[in-house]
Image 1 (cartoon, each protein chain N blue to C red):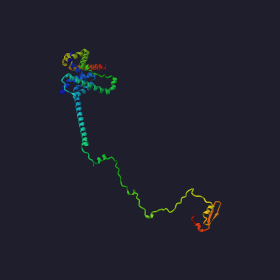
Image 2: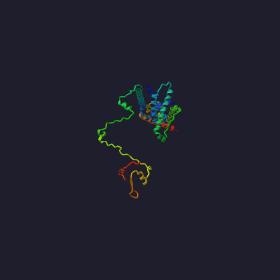
Image 3: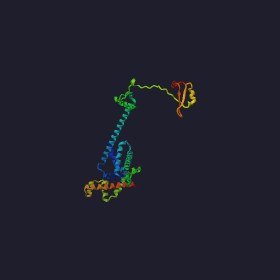
Image 4: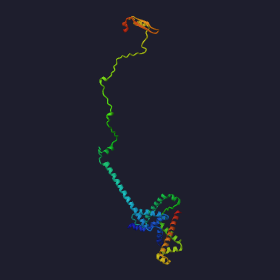
Length: 168
Length: 170
């Protein structure tokens, strides 16, 4: 019992006790399954990376190397390039249009300036007294008739003078 | 074929190593061993010295065990706080002593067995007698002897794992 080699089988059997009979095989199978899954995952990842790289290269070639058309006839391309807002218009219906016509000659009413405008200014006159009034019309015989406390009437002897005459 | 050879040669050794590392926790040891075997397939390379190869294997085993402990700690941290689950920190000395430690523990617990059980173990494993010979000597059936051997081995295993667990708590 002193040699380790003697205890080796016992230790192996003791530690294997209570373990499933196929413990080793199950562990081996599970290991292989995990390794295969890992390998598949690694291959998938590489393939995905390759596809992404190819896609990026294709985009690069398309954008940088191939000449881009100056005028695109494709409606989709136009939509991408426009930087304005398109507004669409339609002709109005006839009922919505208001039209004007020139008037006939008889329908014109024209106004002309026929009245002279007399403008008066303040402070540019002086009230005459009776004597000054009679002196003013001295060359035309006339009478100054008082008709009330504050009113008088100048009556010319010559009816022609009633129509007016120039003053000197 | 090479993998099968490696597997048959090192499986028991690695299992014991991780069982000691996991303080007798078989679930942890099993998961760590599984992870370790996967790592071997990924990183295997040529070695010219068996001891260097074994050292490399123990590095992988320690790494897989540490990952397993981290994983369990993450999921069951609250359980750990209350049950004081042991975590073994391996150092170089304990690596070298794994086998020796197990052997001495086994020797001690065999010595603690009752007389009849100890004799049965000695007959089977140290005297290398067959079950049939033992059964003839004890005037019992082979099945009865096998059954008793199984019970004794279970007892030894539980005592061994319990002691590993107790040691890790200290």
